[in-house]
Length: 157
Image (cartoon, rainbow, N blue to C red):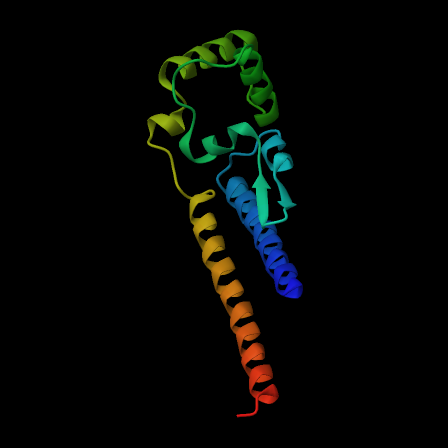
């Protein structure tokens, strides 16, 4: 049965790696990549019971955007860095970054105000769960068939 567990964990790891690659491709295709830190933060960890796809705290905003409200300390500096990463030029970059940060704090990002999107990771997670279920089901089906064959060979029936 240990081989079955290893097979299942391998399936989960493979599927999570493929999920990560599809999310990265969708993220790039949406033009959301600035510094690449979100992509770099994505890591697959194989656990005793399955696996985890890790990403940075802001990962969820890829689809939802950022809602209005409290922002991190130095948020205008974060916006300034984002501007540099995206190649956005302004006559007075610090003032522009401050105004953008203030607008986001008051109204949220444009993505949030537009209602978000659901094409970066949501459909990929569903596809991955279905693929894992199918592959594990096939693996267990093979194992049950193997057990039945062994039982019939060893029985006196």
